Image (cartoon, rainbow, N blue to C red; front, side):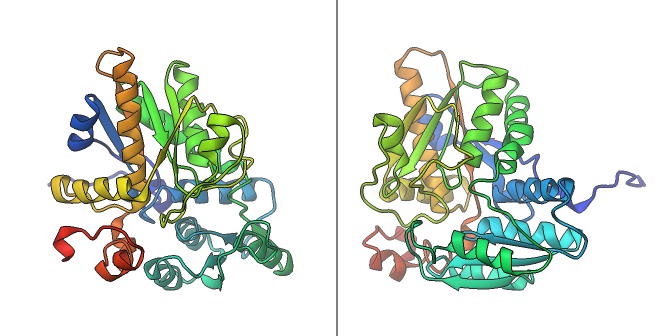
Length: 335
């Protein structure tokens, strides 16, 4: 009998996620499309990485002291990551979230012991926006720090330090492109910066949902939004501190309908239950792969982020009535 001797701290479970070759997207693109399985993190999303780096940074700067509180405004996944990391390190958590996000995210945050504050969704310019509300709560709460995921560059350092080197190593140093959507900008900017440090020729692409302004910004230099999207946690209307200096070479705009095609196919054909942001990312990766193939690159490889688990959207994305109410196609197996 073999006795296990290795010891792993719970926070060491964040990161080092698997990467998987996606067969359907690869056939559609005519090249290899790889998905980084961020749903394998303890909090089931890519946002665990930002949560850990932000909290460790606040500790290192002496702002977060024993028994303190972490306050954040989030669409849900960052809050879940912060709650788990804070629990492991002995901190309290207050999470401010728009009240139109999935019920599963709200229930998860409450189950993790976070204090959940729900606010109506509104534009960033409104002082009652969830980000501004979380900042005020942090200022009013003794011993609290504001995570500030949108403009705290510890967020993107998580991906410079870890996500990019993991992808590079897992693909044996052979990667031609990377793309994902933007919420805070930390994942795209940080992974892009990290990969460019290995090879400047890796093409970094923004995959933007409708209703966001960054596609037009990187294509034409103007922050201009068109259309709308029901995807949670992605879509941005400003250049956050995390996005400043991001090495974005090209951009794609992907509709919810396109993203849902890949959500359905990845579930039915490859056994991956994912959220809509992952479907949008995969659609963008297919477009990037086709672009690289058309330019004559030999068997290019493109990586993207599989952001979170679809189990977080059972009451929305995987609910026929909800899809009909949003005028979106209903997955055939839902009737």
